[in-house]
Image 1 (cartoon, rainbow, N blue to C red):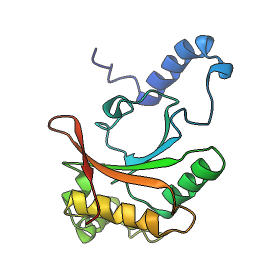
Image 2: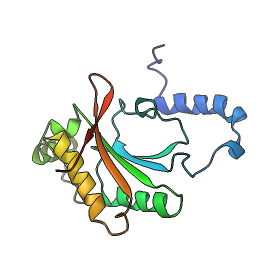
Image 3: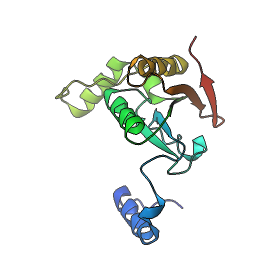
Image 4: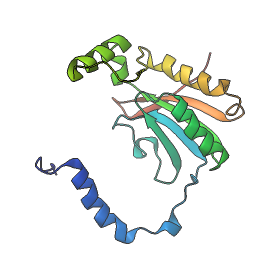
Length: 171
């Protein structure tokens, strides 16, 4: 069903929430993921719980552009591990990522041209050209942190053409 363009996306979400809320039972959900898993992944809409064979409640999904281990992603992983019991971490990037389609400078220039002003605070977009090498960089960043070391950390690329995950290992 195609959404009515006169209705705003947030209004659609609010109506869906009204249908969801009567059946919501807080006793059936937990902030602790059932699989004791945290996933750092891209915000791309093609990556979802279902694409990874997960159900809501199975894992913490930490999403940002590119599936990067940023300071905020690391903060969330530490809370996930030490306060909420996760023991394994997946890094999931994907083919056809928007961050592979422009350089850092091109992204900066495009946004500045569209807004007409420079950024009010520094912004790094973490553009990259090789998705597998990007996954390796994220794994290394996690393993280098002394509060993460000792955790199981594995990396994957989701292929948007066939829906499959392929593991990326460190050399």
